Image (cartoon, rainbow, N blue to C red; front, side, top):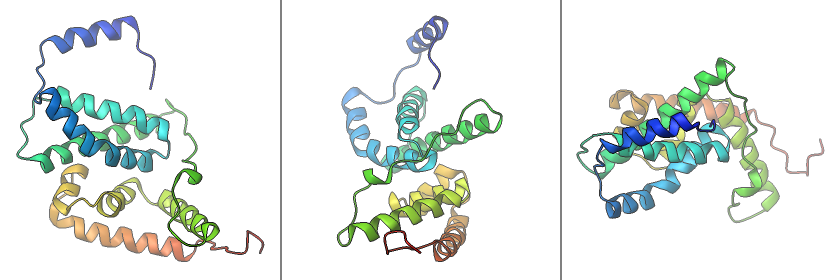
Amino acid sequence: MRDLTFSDVERLEAAEIDVPFEMDEDAFRAFYDRTARPLWSYLSRMTCDPHVADDLLQESYYRLLRTRGHWENEAHRRAYLFRIATNLVRDGRRRARRGHTVALPGPDESSIPAPGGDLAEASVRRTDLRRAMDRLRPRERALLWLAYAQGHAHTEIAQTLGVQTGSVKLLLFRARRKLAGLLRHAPMRTDGGHS
């Protein structure tokens, strides 16, 4: 994210005066506590950069608070938050394609806890999965992450990604099949890297 100038700060302060927040402070804190970690994980996976995910997390909550939206329930508010985050990621990719930003390296696999068992083998599996996920299209990656890492329902995924609820099942099937194909062709080395 770029640094704010003095005129940016003045504009933000002027805009903040006339827009009431829909949630009181306690309600927001509770909502934030329930959603911040899954949202950050989603953003980190989608951007492949934890620092960018930090910035986008803050911007997502800021934009959510700035809306005058009325949500039917908690799930609808959460889906809207993830929709905001998804749009921020898409906007960032568009700017990157136009040459306005620089692509940054992916997250460090050592920060991901290994499941029980052989740590070296688990590390290889995580690396293979990350590489396969990185080869998917952004929407495929988002579908899989929202469905399996975040546990979102199909209606939430549809709202987040802006697709029809009825098409989520087919899109997930295709994304899983593509990921499985990529994983089948991934070099799975358990001998310490020696071929």
